[in-house]
Image 1 (spheres, rainbow, N blue to C red):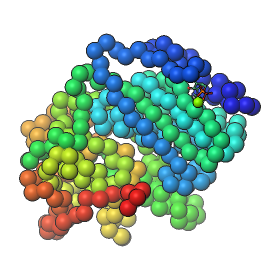
Image 2: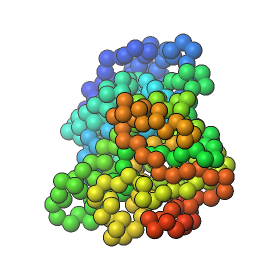
Image 3: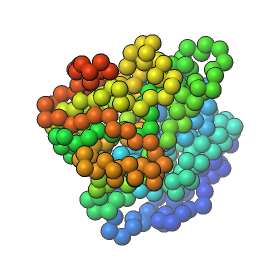
Image 4: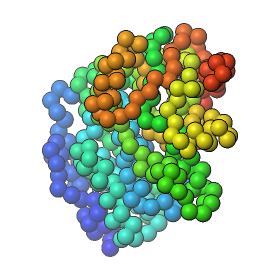
Length: 317
Ligand code: ADP
Ligand code: MG
């Protein structure tokens, strides 16, 4: 199987609406919806840095796209197109089939077309670019949080960190709870529909890839505000709660790979947010408040305020 057979066998599919020219030429030509603005994001997954060697290819196909869709969700954009730059040590058919299956299952669920990419030999690395659309000015940023806004998160926090910990420990057969945590690591759910629903409601938003403390810290810095997190309010699954009791808050505050949304909104929007969450079938929890005092603090379960370093995972600390 040469490079071009590989591309046509696993990645070239029927072109969809808005794709004037897709895979097969030197570049794709895309037709934006009239009057919309283009939103672009790219993310890379490198073996050994972003995933463990031996991660199932279906998971990699899913996750490489999911982390990008999560970025568009945090912008409130509607995803439309993607490009895939794949660097592989060798073209193994079963690997490519499963990778493509993971990728396209998620792409199809969100109506995203794969319109181009690049295929090269080398250490396993996957870059996906996504392109989406918004109405003029109709996007979310990190920069709009206001004093006294409420802070929210979707889903539960720390699951992927506990999943990763269990994979690394490799202590025998995991039970159903740990398997669910591993699934949260390998198959994150980007909150695309809910992100779009937040446009015009949320004052700031970010997706959680590097841990709540650091990612909320980005909102605080961009918005020139601070926050108090209510630790007792953080939404935790049972295994994460057990891990917190045993070893502290790190998996929740500094664990990466949650791919949930963290956002802020005026307290008066609380009810509206509840109904948007119900409509999108997403759990949403109010976890704190924005303060004029420009630092990050946590209200412990005993009521005492503790200061938190707003730092998450960093490739170049
Ligand atoms: P060029 O040499 O002009 O860069 P390539 O040979 O890299 O073109 O790619 C040929 C076509 O296949 C292009 O349309 C490119 O976008 C597409 N393509 C290459 N690799 C992938 C991939 N992994 N997934 C999707 N499309 C791909
Ligand atoms: Mg090329």
